Image (tube, rainbow, N blue to C red):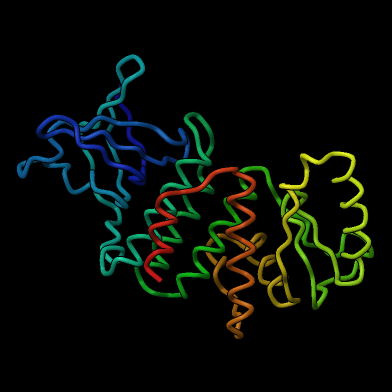
Length: 264
């Protein structure tokens, strides 16, 4: 069986002297593994399409459970991601997150679009890296089934509370008045169920950061970065909340994230 598919290279693994195994994010098949014979040879006609971060159209030959790339044409090489170590590190982290939240056989068209738009924004330096990272993390969490309810305070319904708190594990928002009441309930639950104590995580938010998170979640992927946070604290609150939310719901850490953070 021979067919073609667009795919973004999320991972490349050398095999033998000249070959590679590629992890591709595709729109219709999700995350797939493809063998590319001779990809590391200087004479390979598809070596350029077999590089990390490259978006290309692949001609794939499937035999049983295995896939082999017979030909490929590059659509977007994203050369800008290799301009400096920070861009490359962030793109590597995004690749690792994309691998974690996808599987074979699923419809990943929206995740692919989101990842491509993020790579484009990073490579062209269109927005601050912390903003790109945070938006990707929040949308990745939502696409993994962990959509937070940021429509208003979970207790009183206040929209955009100025001193809000995000209850990370419950995906709920509370205003400064209601967080005390929520804490009292939480303390009672912790007394009755001590194992919950390690699952209570709050992130501070302002009305601006809440609005930014709402925009990041519900805007079209082509405009998901088109907002502005002017204050340094607002950017810090936004970035911290999005990262914390994703990591705790996926219940894992990422080596690429640790490397990215070590650069600052």
